[in-house]
Length: 127
Image 1 (cartoon, rainbow, N blue to C red):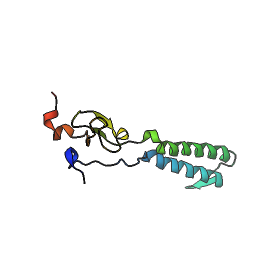
Image 2: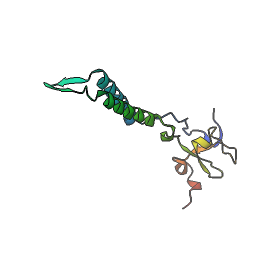
Image 3: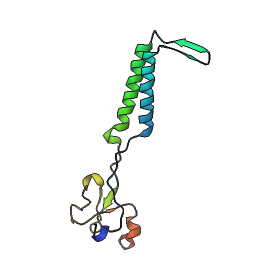
């Protein structure tokens, strides 16, 4: 149970986020690449076309684009590392990655989320 100044504040460990758009279209593009490799001809509403001359290079290009999209969606640099925390005593704001234990490195007291901090502590607000 939490005690002290951080009591009642909602803090959570950030979840791993992925860019859903890139992830979904990466999977679709890679699936389309496999379909192009396996079935070099297609018919759609009576219109038929033959991709047998360029199905291998087109499939490789589409697979590579899909793979790049998939890797970009899971990339570490694109993730949100969570909230920014602030120390109620020294008022130093730090990102979650710098304070995983939610303790101020200077004061060694529990930190609070920056969002809504000054609404909870109007006496610390500077005009």
